[in-house]
Image (cartoon, rainbow, N blue to C red):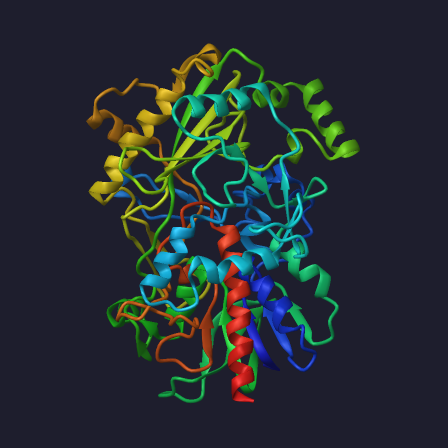
Amino acid sequence: MSQKRADFLIVGAGSAGCVLANRLSADPMNHVILLEAGGRDINPWIHVPVGYFKTLHNPNTDWCYKSEPEPGLNGRSLDWPRGKTLGGSSSINGLLYVRGQKEDYDRWAQCGNRGWSYDDVLPLFKRSESYEKGSDDYHGADGGLSVSMIRAKSDISQAFIDAAVEMGVPRNYDYNGEQQEGVSYFHQTARNGFRCSSAKAFLNPVKKRPNLEILTHAHTETLIFENDESRRVIGVRYSRKGQTHEVMLKPGGEVILSAGAIGSPQILELSGIGRGDVLQKAGVKLRHELPGVGENLQDHLQIRLVYEVNSQTLNDAINKFVPRMGIGLNYVLFRKGPMSLGASQVCVFAKSMEGLETPDIQFHFQPLSADKPGIEMHPFSGITSSVCQLRPESRGHIHIASPNAADYPKIVPNYLSATADQLCAIRAVKFARAMTKTKALSPFIVREHVPSNDPQTDEQLLQCARDISQTIYHPTSTCRMGNDDMAVVDDRLRVRGIAGLRVADASIMPDIVSGNTNAPTIMIGEKASDLILEDRLMKS
């Protein structure tokens, strides 16, 4: 068994892990090892914005998780893609850059998480960002993560924007700025027409540092402790190419789990940290009772309405050979056109009813339609109006079922189990359908393709949501930050009751943010690096 030594051992080279590797290795005195269970990001489709059609559901780049059958979705089991490569899910996501609402972070701080208010985290968002339009009060221009405007627009996308304005939604040219509410074209994590993953933004520029070691295909099996009774982590055991290896910490070193909302609680449970009854059932000896591990799972559930329209959409171009070749040529020559697009063109942050202080629903508009990403487009001119609830109250869980690290944990989201979520789903579908009746959008609409049974009553609309909803791939909060008995980490991201161990990824969110989760997870990586280096300085 080979053994390495490190000051900082980061498990997971995803959105947060790549940031941590960059910041912690900036001091040449720190020896940093980064373990990634997936491979290198050499698949060319990773770097083409529209390439998520090829990388999602591809076992070479996607872990291809599935949820357990969901009672709230009429027993359906949903695909749960997660990135299996350097950059993690930032290498296979839809490139959409959304920070959430400032109230999200203020709520975290009001719950006792010091240093996590919006005023605290805004400088971290700015530090990581290289905004195409330059720096201002809300954006940075010197960071590694390129954030750009979309490079392809369409008449029907503009009609969708105009329809939202007719519905009373304000036009907002920067939903990551002073306020989120409004309709806008999405910002994308792209640079010169290529994807800017966390690996490209933060890992590539520093990967040749002599004090940074990056190991791919390194699947973490368990944490290593001082002895059988100890609660101090001193290393990690992992498998690579059929061999078992260890990384041991130098004195004062730390392990940082950045394996995501699925991987981080899984590693904790495999190491005996979690709910005693869950571990006993899985055949793992309990080392430290921490009942919140794997609990509090939150995700955004999207209701995808599809319409046939009388205007050319990407369906027509992609389904025909000559236009499809034209799209490819436009991208190769100019890095423009449909291949430069992320998952959606237009976003809407809206209030589904009166009396709300901030938006509670988000739209992702696409000038195309398919049953799900990665498969053939519909054989007609189609658009997709996808709407999700921003702050769901339903809570699920993720737990291991065996002591084998290669076995996937059981994912139980409990979608639409909360009454408030059911009511919001009904309002969201009504809002989406009302947009198709506006003066701006109605001239384009031929028919509603999904749902196909024309639901009308609230009961029918809820049934529709149960039948057609899909995850929007935003799992969070399974290692929740807080101060109560169900919290897994404190506000410095230290695992409660365990020395030498932190968690830094989307799993630490006390509550899911009001929007896409990649940008907030990168911010968490920035925050974690500051906390770790501050604590190290205090010890020295």
